[in-house]
Amino acid sequence: MPVKTILVVDDSPTERHVLSELLTRNGYRVITAVNGEEGVEKARQHQPNLILMDVVMPGLNGYQATRTLTRDETTKHIPVIVCTSKGQETDRIWGLRQGALDYLVKPVNAQDLLSKIAAI
View 1 (cartoon, rainbow, N blue to C red):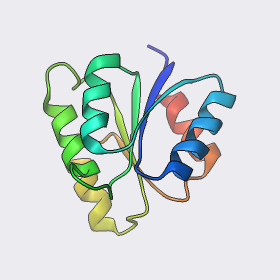
View 2: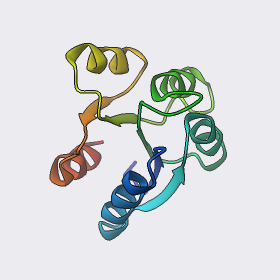
View 3: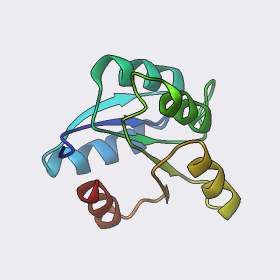
View 4: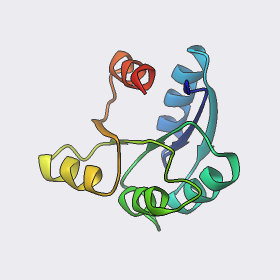
C-alpha cells in the first residue's frame, strides 16, 4: 500500500513545520503530534501509513512511543522511521530494537527521507 498519510511526532514546532511542509509539497497528508503520548493516541485514532518519530521529547520519549506502537495490535503494522538529533551508533541500534523500520539523524536530508518513504 503506498504511503499517503504520515504522522510527524516532534516536540519542536520548527521541526514539525519543516517536515510538514516538505511532505505536503510532495503530495502527502500530514498529521502532527507534539509528544510521544499524543503520537501514540493519534496513531491509534488516524491509522497513518507511516510515522516519523523524534526521540528527545518530554514525557514518553520516541523510543518508548515506538516500542508502544510496534507492540500494539492496532498499530504494529504502521512503519516508524526515527528522525532524531541522537546520532550515535548505539542510539540507532536502540531505535531499531524498539521496532523502528529506519533511523535518520537530523538535520534530515530531504531527498533521503523522500526516497525512504517511497521505498516503503
